[in-house]
Image (tube, rainbow, N blue to C red; front, side):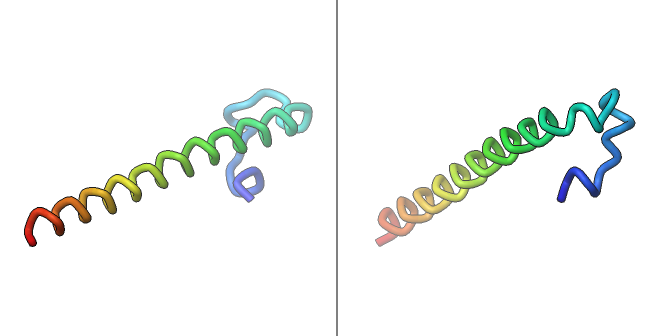
Amino acid sequence: MLISLFDWAKIIKNPIENTGKLKLFLLFISIALGYLISSFVLAVLAFGQNMASSIS
């Protein structure tokens, strides 16, 4: 979906030839972002649990 929404021709030379590399790059980016977001959510949940246990 991101491949069709963004004009990669402005950034990458010969985007038709580099479609496989672009898909692999986007896969790695999505894995990294998913990891960062899930780590952030888990840290917020742990912080909330620590705050709740320290209040009571």
